[in-house]
Length: 307
Image (cartoon, rainbow, N blue to C red):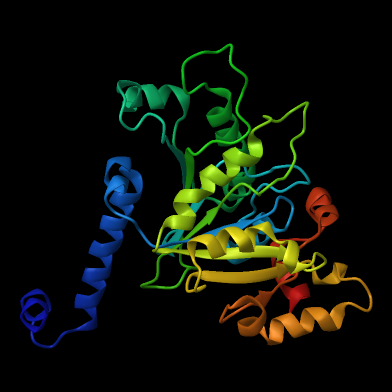
């Protein structure tokens, strides 16, 4: 390492040399994030947010990233939304689709994908406000097309194709690249009118690669007004991470805890190692569905209210 660093930076090991290394690393990471072929051999670090539908996953991610994500009382996340955030002098958002089902077929050529979706580049504050709508459009493009080419088959409820959202700007820390993944929420039943009867199994299958990835942290989101004994997400996480080395439970909706049940929640938070075999647990208060639907509370105000 000493010889390598000297040849790259000189003997003074200047900070500018480390910046060059980081620039090269982020360039490599960008390429591996966009070239699906490499994903078969390279597993990049990421943070996946998992939980039941309407548990507050997307709201939590919105407050973490500072970017609005689609959220409603139904299954709002219908395919993985991968958000990569890193420092840059200029503010920019790039939204694209990474097609999973065509990566090894002739239909997966750039020409075919270009006909389905064109990369969106957003630079102004007004354009960034359109990110939720563009993500919804990308989801619709993914779900409306048929992976087998048979247009007579019913539309899928969820899909494994990834919506890539690359966010850069001066508001993100230097020398740190954070990748967050919003995944479809777990369900036990399906809506007979709008959802596939196998949607529950489809969602679990979609989550499997993230659950199995040893380089992926699992943020298990649970509503605080539901007994953790009934949390399917903790059961799934424990199957793939029995020592809870990668699992971070996060409770949401503390304002909905039944009066008189607060102490039970406090006991879990203060004794996470004993109750859940987890080293760290957290509780956050995000915006409720009414505030999201009415757009009455901004992300900035939501963070201030939580504090």
